[in-house]
Image (cartoon, each protein chain N blue to C red):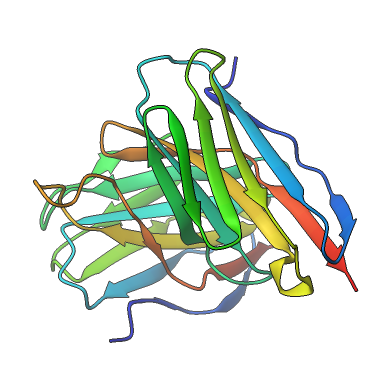
Length: 109
Length: 117
């Protein structure tokens, strides 16, 4: 079983839609969870991180962790064409990050 | 600050050739990483370093070697390139975690696209 699983998509939504991106993980000991965004032909950049369970909001983005289900989510409200990118979840394990495979999101006007 | 830079941006090799990818960071970070990214496989850690003069194996180290002679540089070497090493290679760096820095935020370079024929 992979430590982090992520649906690769692609996910195609109209502008203004609410987007939900999800990952599952296997080890309940993980505590730090991150979302990276990667535009085409660019390196990933940190979007948000959360610690343990709960929600964290930053503008149109909300990261959510459900430790009981080992499920992490990223919600994007009022999605924009500029949000079109690949979103990678990541989990910290002993000074290293374990990445999901990434979900490709396309927001069309 | 330039952040994390990688050279070259593109390279085509023939099977059996060797090459070195250079990563440089100007953020005085202790930790540096080399990843490869392949379709459907996500980012996989090749090697990493927790400080100058140190290196360690990641998830997929076979066929690669690394060196960290200077804190700001991390080199990835392919001694005898194989078609299976065709990939996009990313370097990243991060600071040592302390009381105020609770997460391993990694800063990535722009990537090197390598094709091995």
